[in-house]
Image (cartoon, rainbow, N blue to C red; front, side, top):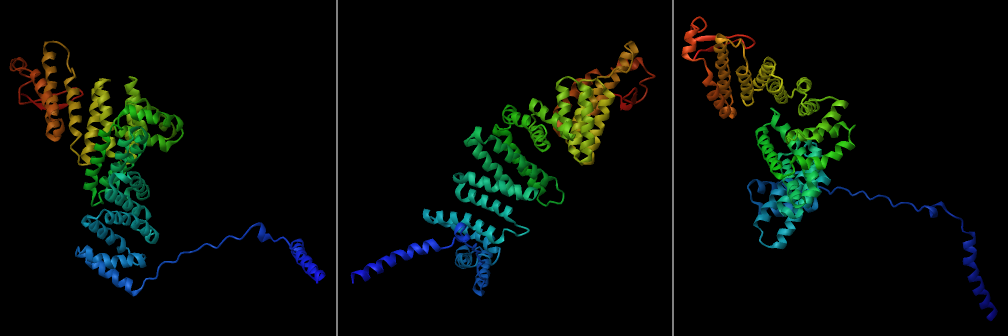
Length: 470
């Protein structure tokens, strides 16, 4: 008995040892198989879903949001892939109930639902060609702002930024504006840490609002233009537009990107937009960009740099390049500015009055082609100043009288300036008052009856214009 027990125990002990010794090594033990991915199927759209969609949609049309909530919630929770109106109508329902709610817990639930709804919309309708994921992210950013205010600024700003990057010039105007608002609020909380982010967000939004405003086929162009003025004003008063602050941010960026044309052009455009074109950082960006690929912005930047160094001939030559390049891109407003700047340097610094008039007249023609009166006035003032600065005749007794006739021609231009462009009215009136004192007197005209025999007078030389005697 004892022997039998001993044999059984010994055999039982030997079996596991034998099994381990003979068990072959399997490849599967070296690299366990991965579990198959679980593909989550879309919910089934039942007849009840279709009926509830119709019920809540009709209730929303009649602004009966409380009545709409029941059938909407049934669809949202059981078949959220049934129809896009689940999300467009759902936003209205949740907003209305949130405004009506007094219980903090209920308001918090609805706020979370408003944001969660956009994530679910992305899952089921993120590939929609008209309202894709990027568009829906904009709605999510707006929901953060609407329901959470400044407590979720960072989350809102991130969604809005992604939306604008995806939708570009097709972005919703409100999304563009709220991106700047949210980024500005974050900048005010941390001026040093968020300045570059705010500047980048402003630049993106302002650029796309400008494109929308200038698109003649855009029915909301006027609204886009007004909103661009709004965000431009925010940036102007923010302190981030200070030239020295921009230099702190972008000096190193320019140095590190001397062969990065996109970055250099972006920085040059920003400096130009905020009128920091006297900055050495702006000059460095323009000069480097101009070497890589000349554009009107880079040429204009080089013109400013040349003018700062006192080389006005080079400045005008660079503006000639800028004019040609901007014309190729059909950037006519910039063309008019470059033409005016060239006129100013020719008049003020080079004393080349005929050249100055040529550029000023070209700028006027460009503005007229765009149907713009503003901007023409300053050109007429330049021409008037050129006339008033001209001495056509020798400085003898007769010549001194005839030289005064240029003031008639000059005042004609000042009068034209304020007639066509009210923005220069005060300046033009001042010049009219000043230069009309130097007209030939009645006695002087009596001394030269052959020259002043009629009611008009031809001012000769390079001016070559007929004016009235007064």
